Amino acid sequence: MDFAFTPEQELVRSSLEEFCAREMPREKVREWDETVDFVPEELWKKMAELGFFAFSVPAEYGGEGADMVTAMAAFEVLSKYSTAVALGVGATVGFGARTVNELGTEEQKRDILPRLARGEVKFSLGLTEPAGGTDILGAISTYAVRDGDDYVINGQKIYITGAHKADYISTMVITDRENPKRSRALSTFLVPTDLEGLEIRTIPKVGCHACAACEVFYQDVRVPASSLVGTLNNGWYEMLSTLNPERIGVAMISLGLAEAVFEDCLAYAKERRAFGKPIGQFMAIQHYLANMATEIELARNLVYKCAWLCDNGFPYHVEASMAKMYASDVALRAATTGMEIFAGYGYTMECDMQRYWRDSQQMVFSPISQEMSRNFIAQCFGLPKSF
Ligand SMILES: Cc1cc2nc3c(=O)[nH]c(=O)nc-3n(C[C@H](O)[C@H](O)[C@H](O)COP(=O)(O)OP(=O)(O)OC[C@H]3O[C@@H](n4cnc5c(N)ncnc54)[C@H](O)[C@@H]3O)c2cc1C
Image (cartoon, rainbow, N blue to C red; front, side, top):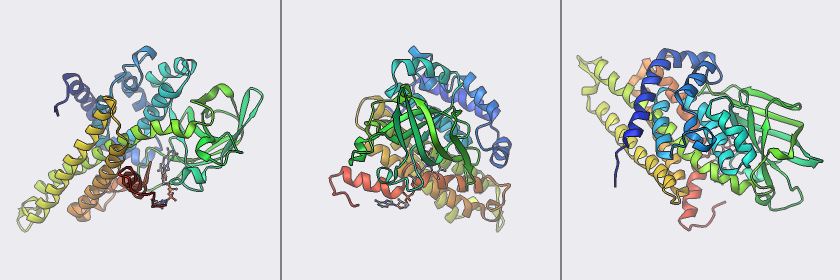
């Protein structure tokens, strides 16, 4: 068993650390939280120049084809600096590079992946609908009907991360309305966002401000049949292959957030004084920090183990759900404890702790709620479906 990063992974981490310290200092991340609704274009371009997007694309399509452990090592560094930025770039890496690479035709790969590796295209995933995100199969009503060489899409998606800046929304729709088995009736289309009939509106939300979520309306949106990604009517099962890596990614983003909280709390515990001593001398504060550090270590081991299982061809769907569930709980608990440690100052908008606290809420229910993660894990151990 080897817990060390390879020299290449260490290099990725140190160059990204240097990049983030230079391009994403605290003042900028705070400013973005207050003023922008997506990863600033200038930062996106600089990340592309650094080769960040090339990581997720195989070498034959102009990328560097990094494995999951290396990709997660990079996301750990990035997420410590900004949850919103990590989520924004994560959507393109997860729903663009992975979807096209795993499910796309040769033509789609040649068209999209080299541009994605250069940071020239952005992606979103359009799965959730207003009737519900947990019970997707029961809630989905957006549909596509074949018309000559095209499909015509009608319906609505909700909470779609980064759709307002995306070039493509990987949109899941019903393509066989006659089939009572919904899981056999869905397909995914790469829908360009400049099409007539598509309307996108951002939704004001509590946290992760620099990565907005959107409502997306499809009214007679016409896409060529060639924009189908994967197999007609088998989209549900194929999409699952991108949802497990997404859970590892969100687990890592949660972990990065928890690590940022811990570092700030540790520094504050040494600096803030009460009763003539640094508050870090009080046992209560020490125990808060010890618990936080232990949970972070556990989450870190689980997330990297998932990435390792994925890289080495082992099943990892149970561990990916555990990692998402546990790491997002750890982030939420850390940020809540951080608010106690920072007390009055933590409640002010000039302190980063309130941002961590707001941001941590998003990972709790998205992309899958804690309750549904637990249902799934229990079922994987042979217990009956509880719903
Ligand atoms: C900011 C943000 C970004 C998002 N980004 C995207 C995106 O990019 N693309 C996308 O497609 N979606 C996205 N989502 C949607 C997200 O995946 C859903 O919000 C999530 O799956 C939960 O669905 P819901 O909010 O409809 O909750 P609901 O499904 O309404 O659930 C409500 C509550 O009921 C519980 N519940 C439901 N069923 C069960 C059950 N069987 N057992 C126990 N408890 C149950 C849930 O756990 C939850 O606590 C995003 C959401 C937000 C808010």
